[in-house]
Length: 317
Image 1 (cartoon, helix red, strand yellow):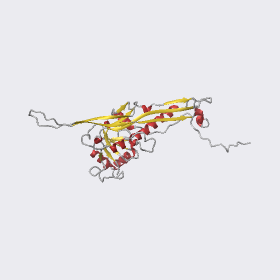
Image 2 (cartoon, helix red, strand yellow):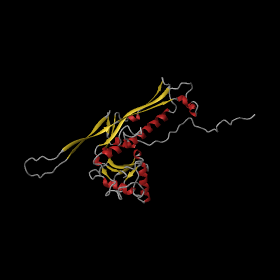
Image 3 (cartoon, one colour):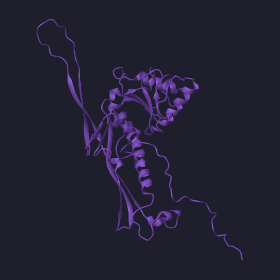
Image 4 (cartoon, helix red, strand yellow):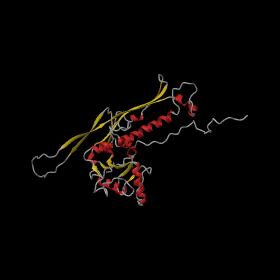
């Protein structure tokens, strides 16, 4: 007699006691806006950013009389939130034929899922990563269901009047540029810096933001040029100070794949939501009538800027 094992797959040890989740891109833009204190709470549909501006005309003094001059104006920009929900139905019984059966309780009825903490952490981070992209690339006309719930900053800045265009002669050498390369990226960022309006260039919260892909092209160009006078703050693919200036260059995953670069104050960006950090709240429950475990999250979110004339954009021509 001998063993008949031809129908069995070769054994591979699978660790049913742990389930490693893959890393997900973080929602850094929302955190930056929150750090500036510009989160509008209680927004059910839309809410305005109310802007006041005033001028001051100097007149010759030393004489009596009254000669009124000057204007104080009020304008508004609107933050319209998108209404979003995430729902998933999970059937633990589907795991019975897989290695995950080891994590199931005894019996044939399951009112929870194994690795619930890992699952919920992964789900929350995935939602945050998708929101990071939407905050910049959101477009209500998009065919992409993860992008069409509200308009993002790229669309809103692009439609606003007064935004400074850096991809023109006088700012970026050789402009307009149609691609970003190691040969022109240093000039590109210098040009964006040069285009920042003088009234805000020295603001403490003025930053230049770009995708991590553009950021890496820039850092490689600086390294190859032996410009070792710059210092990284945090991870090498996160942020550092633009050489020769006090302004941070920040890599944002929400701008990945766009080739866009923006200079703006953090206090110029606004985030609207119904409940603070609502996108982080969710519920996992057992639906007895469906005999399945369900995940539910629902939230509202939207964004905009207050002062378009304080924003610099670099968009490839």
